[in-house]
Structure formats: C-alpha cells, structure tokens
Length: 269
Ligand code: DGL
Image (cartoon, rainbow, N blue to C red; front, side, top):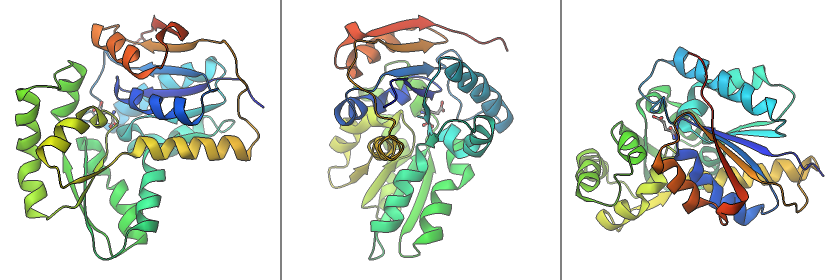
C-alpha cells in the first residue's frame, strides 16, 4: 500500500481528461495536478523551453511527495520523457504516448490507415511513428499538427461553429486524402473535441491515449504494491492562471468537486 498522491501535469487543462478514467479504474487514488495555464500552449515552443518548464513542474510535484508522475501531455512526453526520468529516478514516470503506441503496434493488422493529430512539437518528434511503424510495418500512419485547437480549448471555445470550422480546416483533406479509418487524439486537450469530431466524421474511430495511460498506471501500482487505500484526503489542483475555464473543467472532470482544493502556483521565469 502507498497512500501518497499521484502527480499529473500538463500545459493547461488537457491533462484533466485523464481524471474520469482514473476515478473509474482507481477510485482510491488521490491526485496532485498542475496545469500551466499561464504559459500554455507548449506545442509551438522550443524544446529547451518545454524542458525548463517541465523541470519546474516535476520538481514541484516531487516536493508534494507524489509516488508517481503521469506526464498528461503528449508534447512533454514526446520531448522530455527521458530527461524527466533521469531527473527523478526515485519514482516511476509515465508518458502518455508509449502505452497507446504500444497497443496499436501490437493489435493493428491488415494495412489499416491511422491518423495521429497533435501539436507541432509532438508531430515533429516523430515519436508515434517511431514506436508504431518501427514495430509494425503493416500500419499506415499519417500525422497532422493542429496547433490552433489548444488555444481555443483553453478559452472554452468548443461547442460552436468556430471550433467546427477549425476542425474541418485541419481534418477534411487529411482524412479524405489518406482514407483514414482511425484517428489518435495525440494531445490530451483533444478529447474535449470528441463530440465535434464524432458528429463531423461519424465513420471515424477515435483512439484516446488517456484511457490507455491509466491502465498502465494501474499495472505499475499493482506490480509494486503501491495502490492507495480509501481515504478522505483532498485532491490538489494547481494552475499558473486560475481562469474560470480551469475551475469549470475541474468541476466537470472530478466526480465530487468538494473533494478538490484548487490553488494558484506560478514559477519565476
Ligand atoms: N495537452 C498538451 C498535449 O497533449 C497540449 C500541448 C500544448 O500546450 O500545446 O500535447
């Protein structure tokens, strides 16, 4: 047993999309979440900058005595996973890309066409392609950076025409020209667009890495006898800008928002 919390972090609200699955699969686990809402988006920034921000946040999570860190951001997972594992060798650090990419490379066969959408940094890293097609030559993988999605989602512009037009701008030709059957939501912000994408492209199957990463968390906690017992401890959520949208998303993703304490935390540049 290990009743310490699990640290999650993202450039903003995207990593919160992991929370509903966590609460379903591992209801006793407590969370310390950090969303860098003042400095989002990360996906178009230089890798050195992303790494510097990630060190500040992961050090802060470790100072809260977390038993494990989940990098609930594809951009940081794609660019900083190894560096973060070297910086904090005492705890397991899980990126959001490996679990889903491993599953796809294991399970897909028959030359299926799969698309990956993500930030510029995630797509430029080639990490999805390296893992998936590096292990399974049958998968036809196509990638597309969609950098305008994250700022719109952080502003809460989701369920409307502006978002639908932006989705069509990025995806209409991408899906048609490559005959895509499946689409990996390769940014933890993108599950917020699930309903829009399902409505616009009803034939397309969406793959959400957040669900897969929670299965990996469960596996590691079980293997190391680190599962938490039931407790009345609070979840802690920090943001570098306490926007109304951050609070709204917290209210939406946690089953009971009375168990969540929200606080402001900003780092010196
Ligand atoms: N949620 C982050 C990801 O998964 C968003 C990146 C960004 O801030 O641009 O990539």
